[in-house]
Image 1 (spheres, rainbow, N blue to C red):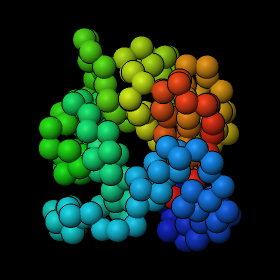
Image 2 (image 1 turned 90 degrees about the horizontal axis):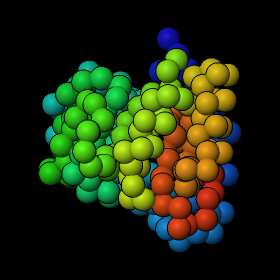
Image 3 (image 1 turned 90 degrees about the vertical axis):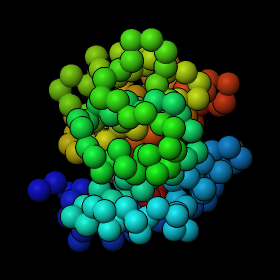
Amino acid sequence: MSLYNKKGIYPLLWLRRIRHSRGFGVQSPTAYSFIRYVINEHYPYYAYSELAEQFPSTGWCERKLFRLYLRIANHVQAAVMVDLCGRNDCLRAYVKAGCHSTEVVYAMPDNGTAGIVRMRITDGFPTQFSNVIDKVDAQSIVIIEDIHRNREARKMWRNVVADKRTGRTFDLYYCGIVTFDLSKYKQHYKVNF
């Protein structure tokens, strides 16, 4: 079992990242708004209780991430979300609750762009990420899971952060969020999620 699934480690991670809570120290109004009202929104959304009843066996960390994906879908209002982590009906329900018109697909589209992409750091990640970058635009968001799984994953995440094709990045420990709006100043934020 990885550290992500152990609830006992969560308080230690939270305390270690307490200075990065709720947008403290973030100077950019758009980054602050994204952190405060999308990533760390604490008010219950309309669908949380219904989705919890529909998927009662979802673990606490997975539920926390799926609620984040609901808020991101609501924020972005993307036509297409690409889930490269494999078919997951629970994720699909959460994303659809965030934006009813978002179509969840499991491969990069041949034409057009992907509004939201969910992927995981695996052996073929660098090539996969390069392919994803070719299919995103300035409004797209890429969510990368397992960025702190091991030393190699942390190295790959640092490469994503340093990549000149990426814009603002957010390290939530359980996942990383990458934006591609290059008109905004490139900045990396650690967020106590």
